Image 1 (cartoon, rainbow, N blue to C red):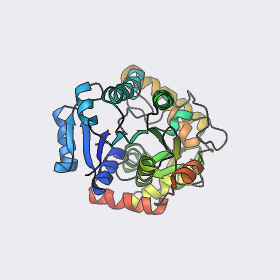
Image 2: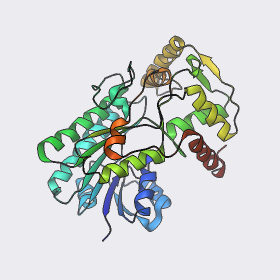
Image 3: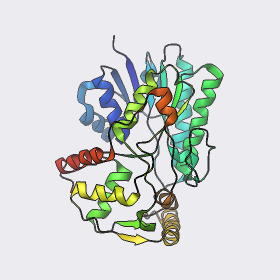
Length: 337
């Protein structure tokens, strides 16, 4: 009998890669898809008849119970992601939505649930790190509404683990890139295509990237490792030796764009980012820069993956050059450029 996996956020960037991996491993996959026709159409177009699509959202208890019924694994990938936007949206989806899913798990019973994987983010420890950090670093409020809300959701999952032997695991990826990545592929490529690409502080900040399939490898390891429940695992590709200039240069080359870019000193970029952030708050103008984005692009410190290596046996398989090659192939095949 195949394992049953219930996935929230299965039509998103990372969630889509996970669903395809689960299908390849022979799982019976259920996807929670918001019941609007276009969202269900997206799921059907992505996966066809290879998955069961459950119409509803994280606040639809009937849909959650249907997805959870008899499930062996729950992969909670759905989230409000971004470096700007209304505070209420981040808290509603990332905090309240996660609580609804956890409550539904409790209501239906978790005796047969093997694992609950929560996909979080390194934004929970903020943008002001001064040394390489691991899973013991304290939560921070410098990761914006996104980081704060994801941290609150993490603590809810961990609390359930402590109180009731809930089989929850938290995966914290760093900067996730790959074919279709909205923030770290599509957004900068759009600026490159328009001739508006720029570096902050000369691109000297360190890029703690992780290729999307490496994230999925970590998720699958956490789903089967007996020592994973109740733990947090930081996931990254490298030791921070890649600068943002190197990352964006490789990205431009893989897509066939010019590597030329303007430069903004950090203090100028932060001033511009703050101004754009407030223009977005007041008038809905989409910002090119935000304070959180500037923090990411100028950070010189990153994260350790030693715990994921020692406990899960995680090793990043796709290096940056190969990841960029795959991005370039996808970009050209899609005819986006």
